[in-house]
Amino acid sequence: MGTFSEFVLSAAAARQFPTDNLPEVALVGRSNVGKSSLLNSLLRSPKLARTSNTPGRTQTLNFYRIWPEGKPNFGDARLDPEAGEERFSLRGSAREAAVASGAFYFVDMPGYGYAKVSETQKQAWRKLIEQYLLNRENLKAVLQVVDLRHPPSRDDIAMWEWLRHFGKVRLCVATKADKLSRNERPTNLRTMAKDLGIMSTQAPSPEGPASAEEEAILMYSAEDGLGREQLLPWILSITKK
Image 1 (cartoon, rainbow, N blue to C red):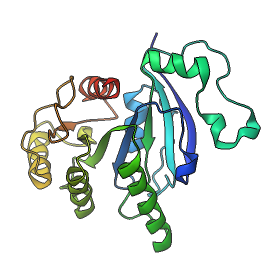
Image 2: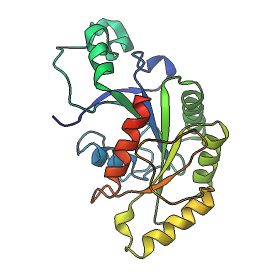
Image 3: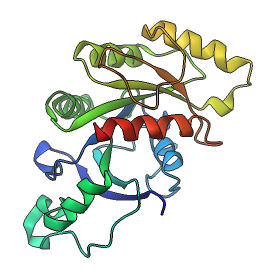
Image 4: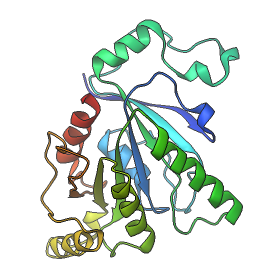
C-alpha cells in the first residue's frame, strides 16, 4: 500500500489550525519557487497541491495530511459539519489509527518575495507565519525551498538565518535542478550553501539531524524526482521522533 495524501484545510488564523496534534512539517520559500510542485512530486500525487504561474497564489496556511502507509479504513473521521474548524481534526479511533500509522501534516505557507498584494496583507501573512513557526508545538521541521538556478535572495538568507536563530530543525531543498546541466548543479549548490552558511553539500542523513544545529542542503527536481529518495526518508524520520 502506497502513501495516501489529502488536502485538509486552509487556515487564515491560528484558531483554524488542526487540533489533533499530529506532527507537522512546514514548507517556506519565495513566491513561485515550486513548493506545490515539490509536494506533488514527493508524494506522487500530481493533483494534491494546486500549482500556478502567478506569484502569491498561496494566501493561507494549507494543511495536507499524509498517511505514509496508506489511509486505514476507519470510516468518516470528520465531526458534525456544525462543529466549525474542529470538524477537520481527527478524533477517537481515527486519531489512534493516524498516530499508529505515522500520519503527519505538510503545511504549505504563503510565499515571501514579490507577491502582488498590499503591504497590509504582507504584514498579516508575516504575523501568521511567525506565530505558527514560533509557537506551534507539534512543528517538527521546516523545509526551506530555494531555486538552484539562482543565488539565494536576501529574503532566502533572512529566512534561513531566522530559522537558525530560533533553533528550528531545518533542511534547505534546492529545487528546479532539472533546469541546469549536470556540470552546473554542483557549482550552484556550493554557492547556495556558502551564501546560507551551510558547511556541507552532502545529502542529509536518512536518520534526520542529530540536533537543530545540524544543517543540510539537498538538490531536488519535481520533474524527474531527483532527491526524492533522500528527502522522504529524512521527513519520515523527523516526524517519528
